[in-house]
Image (cartoon, chains in turn yellow, brown):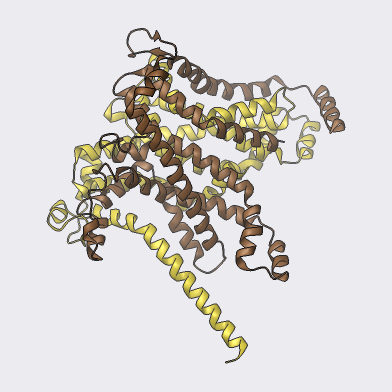
Length: 282
Length: 300
């Protein structure tokens, strides 16, 4: 056997074992997702008769109907979107303005302010839960989606400022100086120059923060009380209590709750992964 | 350095900060102050009181903290939290690094494998918990698989057994976290200069020596990030436990965060709940400070 032949064979072996290993790992990771998808379209009788872990003997979408209508998941999904979308837009708008000020102007104590804001986001939320619920009560916002938007914006904004600051800091100052000479004010500089250049970071943070806010449970059950106002995560827990051991309904509910973030992920995968790295490594 | 600061000072004197820029910074800062800093101060104060949420809080000094010493549930929750940090944190770091090392090579199909490991990251921990609850059922996939391989003896009511509940809750949390840690390490591995490996190969270093003397030291800053992310995430962990067991059975899967929540919002002992939250804060404090110190160095 020639040396070249041996090398080619070794490489083929390496490729095959790589795909075997990585494939097995991926399969292991996808099994729970596949299981839930399959369970969500089985009928209750099928699960009761054959067991949860058996192969499906039926196909029906009634689990989805029950979760959506009787379990209130439709309403809950709407609540989640009504909170997530304004929160993402508002907190990114506010954070990009603050980051612009801190990154592009010699404000006194700018580094201290930046770290103070980041520090607020690093606090464990548990220390804030009780006072936040009392503050929202005092404001008459308790049990309303506005309270949830308020606290999500307040808690998230520090982190977004920090990330966007790092990004805006790396834009060369000459770009801004040219605009200053042309007589542009801060708002115009922000709107016409800095913000367009920050779009990749904004997209990354947008995708990331959408999933965070959409997936939140703790803040929601802290400032909300009424079932019909709860977002999808809390409603899913309610479903678990309401449809005990009706696994087709619970699985369908989980699919409904996971679908929007999976869609965002698949659509913005590149931005999303970039966002995780922006936030952490920077 | 001195020249630099002098230049900066001169520039600050030259460019006055327009008032509108002050507003740009102050409005978000005030939003955060109102929803975060002000409540945080209140939280610390409330930890020194007894409060049922209705009548006025009664100041008791360090009474709540003293009570913790005799509180066996607190001890369980603290121990479980430490265990959670070690197991959930340690395993997600190790397995995340392992997955990143395996999937760093640019081969055909690697994108699919990465996406498969990463997909659970976008799920809520609540949905993740319910997915795994189905897996853990007595007639669920895990017990069926054990049966299939002739390991029927190992079958369990995983979530209902005090001995296994905590570990059964860690698995879904890991399933979701490993992909996240993998992404961080993948970026770190990508940032290592390939010249280093080439030089090592010329010197005749083995794969293991390359890993030991190039990869590990080069990943130092990523390790620091992963460590902070893990500690902070561990102490915040709530959703997955709440959805799966609520800390039960008999507090066997109780974490400080779930104990804090149930003490405050179910037993309505808001003062004691605040004190538990302060303990969580104290545990996170070191990481928060080191994160901020690192951020401070990089802020310019």
